[in-house]
Length: 334
Length: 242
View (tube, helix red, strand yellow):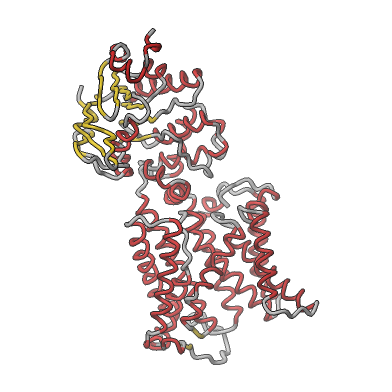
């Protein structure tokens, strides 16, 4: 099992992975409360980016509405908790099939009727917007007034109820990100992974090679949606409040896709590395601007945007493929 | 010999342009059959109907005794008809090996098993040494052979080759001709090719169908067809026969 997992991975890459994992495991011992929240964000976006990457990076289907699946996961788990006292893991067991089904409906409508490319992307935005407006008027989840989870001081971390210190959320997200990485690698090396890449590269040629493209695109959407809903459950129990305007906002969908784009679409390390690059940039920029006492409204966004633009221009495949070449890691599927 | 592929009265019209007009022919099992004709004669349209890209407006196409017209390209490939494209369509970011593995995975579930099959084919088509290169880095002749390998990897009974020789030098043409002949002899692969390169047609084909303006104008053995006056007038030109 282990040999199967690491089969074909060069030693240097294994060392890098090991160091990264140890660094992540040890980090809470060394960082303060603020930095811990930044690390939680990094892991959150690494996980959701990995899930989004299955659709875009592997199967070539651009989703600009992944906030939908985050929101569905968040609202399902939170509502079951608030109304019935059901814990987050039971919520997850409901949220995952619900998100998968939603993904399947969107995928079916798009792929059955040949909607692809930017039109597919618009469809994903539309569904996220439907959900935003719908939840804004959905009384059971308190509509636009927001759904709140009871917050109390907890003497100890309760993993079963996901109540406790941010460190617990950090480790839950770390485990999820690590699992997602291993899972995505296994997918990519499997039959379905090859078919996805073929579809991404040339759908017409893939069909001529006997691939039922509809079927495999559906699998990509369903897996991606199901995985993303887990991040929503964590989101709900970490922040303890949900507003449709925020959770389903299109800017949340964009946040999810930034890391894999910066890190390298279609790669396994890209989504993780991309989060670091983005968060380090954002935090570094914030500190620098504070240091120089610059206080122009919106300046952070402008500089941040400009730097991202430079990264994308300088490294159009993303930071990871560039770094992998520098590290002389030639295995392309990493 | 029984007909493996049977095209009967197949017609396709594009906005008033009759691209293929009641095409009728049989390809026997194990045969190498060529379709020739001037540009715009309807050859590729005919291919695209057999491969499932277009649904014919009329007529029927049968393969191994079953009607296949109107099926999608992936279903047709799964039944045993593989194809190459006139303008090659590799999976550019994948390696040569991965391109062929995709084809081999159609009837194999294990990636390792598919890789073995891909390696066999890459050796046969003299691409084994280039297997780890990205498909986008290959030269045109190599891309054409890779596409052939990918099509063969799906274990077809019939392969449709759309101008696989175009743009190749004579030595490269002879190489592909030799490979195709071997495949035809060894595994009984049936080949239907569209070709402008008469050198390849004469060397390969057992039977030739000539189409012009969507309609068949001649059908027979290669040496008979090239002496047919209608064919000379419309396509080959008097110089070709000499």
